[in-house]
Amino acid sequence: MFHLHVPIFAVLVSLTVGQYDDYDYQPASQYGPSSANCAQECECPINFPTAMYCDSRKLKFVPIVPSGIKYLYLQNNLIEEIKAGVFDNVTADLRWLVLDHNQITNEKVAKGTIDKLTGLHKFFFSSNKLTEAVIPPSKSLDELKMMNNQMSKFPAGSLAGMQNLTSVHLQNNELTSKSLNGVFKGLNSLVSIDLTNNKLKKLPSGMPSSLEAFYGDYNEINSIAAGDLKELPKLAYLRLAYNQMTDAGIPAGVFNVTNLIELDLSYNKLQSIPEINEQLEHLYLQVNRINKFDLGNICKFSSPLNYSRLKHLRLDGNNITHADLPHDSSNCLRQASDIIFD
Image (cartoon, rainbow, N blue to C red; front, side, top):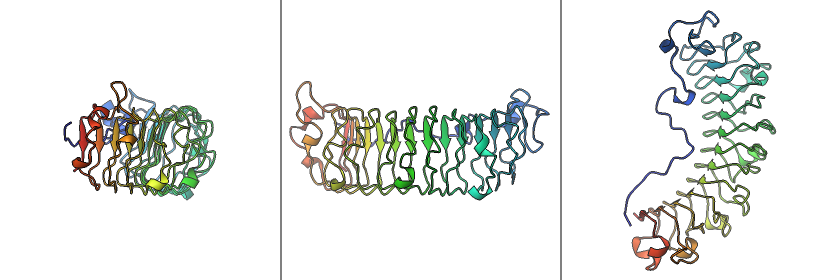
């Protein structure tokens, strides 16, 4: 076994390496002259006439969008309000709307604007001043990003019927478990939910069986209900680092589900290694209060055909050392490439 420090695997997470990577975006200047069918404050490249680039122009308002525009980029401005009528020409045709990094509040989003956009596929409304989620009524929506706001409310039923929605990014808000109860119910294409750095005390109820990844780091979660994960048969990646979980808040066997590949419970208040399934590959338990190595919670029994698939196990920052590793652990942990104690 090797003593290597490796980063937690990033699965189903978009890592932005460039200013526009989240938007499949290229500045308009790369496309040449602008089309005549364009708001004067923006650019609409002749060879990409369905896109209107209005980003990074110190705009304080959303310009009227001409008919024929499907992709609208308004990020990195000083926009404070969305006035009625600006989307009237594209209510059914607009596919992408990017409003990130502005100064928009709920009170300044006029009725008859976002609530009329029935054809959106992607809606990005991050880094503004929203206190409540603003959701377009599009059944075609497949990606929703409303990160870095001050949202504490999420209207019940606002996502109902969105069967194409695959990912929801709501990190860095003030959402509670109660405000999200039932919000994701029935979204049968949803595979990823990111609620990092909110105010959850438990997992939101009603998450769909299609879910493959849940990110809940930096919340106030102190317990997991006994049936939570059994209702999520495809969940492979569960991250709950930097929460308030104790042994008492983890029912016996709650993490012993065959679908999990990665489980992150680091920076909590656990005193023992929780029971896991032998199919789990990555287990992160660093910086807890663990004081014993219970091999039985990793392998019920081991034999040539029964052993743990764990590849990475982190136990550093606990009250346990390599000397606490049971002498008969080698068969159970035969696939572990690193077990970190300090």
